[in-house]
Image (tube, rainbow, N blue to C red; front, side, top):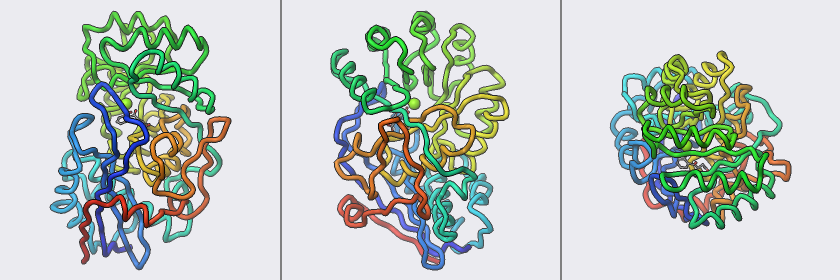
Length: 369
Ligand code: OSB
Ligand code: MG
């Protein structure tokens, strides 16, 4: 296929509740949506960059620059045998995984729509359901956190993750554990600690967490390996993993025992599947992370999670936790048993509601060949 038109829109969707982590507080989802068209069919890729570089270095501004000046010129008008070729085509550009991923995801979604098959088919997945977990941000106090945990447990989520930061860690975990001794529970620190905090994580071993996600620096694997040797709780890496090679090196070093895969963080579906393959070959569980995506990116995550190595519930929760009105209809819903049905329609499989996209759009640019 030959992609003859690429469009990028910047959208702003208010969040129903602010989402707070160790790196900041978000009240709205401000993101880029990439469309790629060939022969009158259009596919969509949601970019996971934020307005700020507080989770990882990329921003909406850097993504737009990379698309406009480097990635779009590589793709526009070129004969593509398969979207997986974009990974090789983009390899010369170092970093900028979120920018690469948004365009590559649009090309995969376009391929699925052209073939009139669900996205999972072109990713090598399967139909059915996926297991859903939930990520709870930092709350005002322990009481509010316990209320949130109770509500999400009631909603059926198969695993609960809470955000932690220095001074807001052991007492949160022990309060939840006191009330729910058997709850599948994990914590995510988003790089807020250093190796000198090893005693804290040793102490938390007693709470039998499923894992501790990215406790140390965003660009580290060496200290994570040291920490993993000192604690029983499995370390899971998020921020540190940008490729299948990163995953291999982290596993060789013993820096983690679980890997969080985000398509945007690793540069696309092709690389995400390769991260999955590296882990699966070593019996290391992977799960799919989330970035507060709208329904478009959320459904992309649903399809990815049908690959066989996704053996743990991911951070893909119901649209209604985030948005008053999602961009897709129907919205993503989680059943009482904590599962999400994998759509069977073409591409992401739910309709995009264009009037809502138009209302949320703050900027638009397009390129044609
Ligand atoms: O670290 O996984 C993370 C959200 C934004 C940036 C980073 C992370 C997160 C989440 C939320 O944990 C997952 C979600 O509900 O989409
Ligand atoms: Mg994380």
